[in-house]
Length: 86
Image (tube, rainbow, N blue to C red; front, top):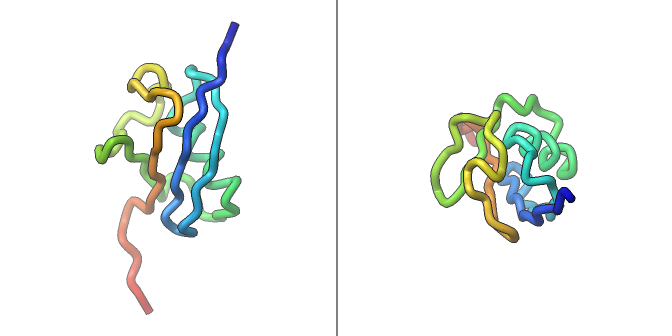
């Protein structure tokens, strides 16, 4: 039985949060792609990083279970580099 893991992901480019129900075996890279897709961000997912509890998740191939993401956790997807304000 593969139970879904509810998480909330804030995408700072659009200041919107999405609620996702994912398998614990979902990779951080897949979580990031899905959050960007749901918020209609059209940039390459490689331009973004995932943060959990304030720390950047460097190994995006790691699963939610492997990094210890609990149910109803909050993660952030933000640009890898700051963009200039025009």
